[in-house]
Amino acid sequence: MTRSAAPDMPPLGLAGAYRMRWKRRRMLWRALRARRQMRKMAGSSDRIPGNGVLVFIVLRNEITRLPYFLEYYRRLGAVHFLVVDNDSDDGSTEYLAQQCDVSVWQTAASYREARFGLNWLGWLLIRYGHGRWCLTVDADELLVYSGMEKRGLDDLTQSLEQQGRRGFGALMLDLYPKGALGAQSYAPGQDPCEILQWFDAGPYRAVRQQPMGNLWVQGGARERVFFQEQPERSPTLNKLPLIRWNRRYSYMNSTHSLLPPQMNALYDGPGGPDPSGVLLHTKFLPEIVLKSATEKQRQQHFHTPLQFDGYYDEISGTPDLWHSGSVRYRGPEQLANSGLMTPIIW
Image 1 (spheres, rainbow, N blue to C red):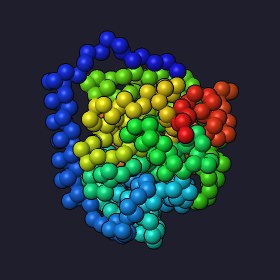
Image 2: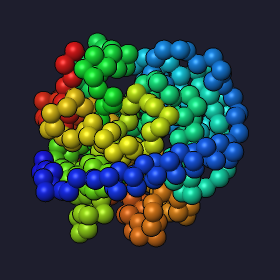
Image 3: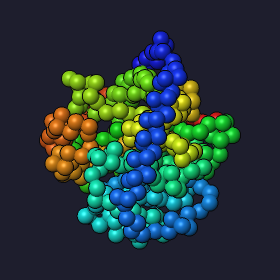
């Protein structure tokens, strides 16, 4: 892990703080306006339990992943799922509507123009997340942390509160199969880790960016395979998925960064001193090949989507991400021992 904290970074200052405050307010206003784009489809949001962790997610066509995703977070103790369905046509909406602990909003609006779904999620976090511990993830992200075999999300958030912490950061760790992408078989409800058994233990690098002070972690498998010639364009791997939410907060770039700026100090990357977890990124299930062709056509997932056509083309070419340095995934304690996350003090 290489790290550059840029110790000579200038402080934000009064003018910078003022700009960040107004930027945050603009994002909150956009979230308020975005509520008009969503239509409540199903669920019992008026009967959300008063305590416990809420899970927030935007998705499109994730019927294959949903059975395991929901069961995984239920086992960890999540009490309700608040889902924005972006015009799925694979049965995801109907499946979610049948779940007693899921509330579903549907929208056909542009995912990209909604700040990649953040405007929609922003409204739900304002409306339902204030004062609550909120876990904001994608359908292909499974949160793991040291001690989770015996301690669920309620234990985790209670320990964080006792230590005066307002959130919990995580490294997004790409899991992948051995062999050509798309050559495996996956059944809905199956643990993705049975198919995606490998990861890159490094290298990873982290820098702090101004003006928000947000971390920027890059490296790992996707950089090695797809962005070796342009590593600066490789995916951002740091996230702040679990936050004791306040209606004045706003995610800025997925869950990679957050305003107000001091919230970004919650995570210092792999090897950092503060408790952290890992988001197992299960993107590379067999369906990834077909989905890449679809997403290339939709042009919804990147700020400059045409620059990533080559990335989608490479995935469609069914490469083998495994190499001699790949490490077999054996559980969260392995990741803690390797320094990819920092155990919490229970």
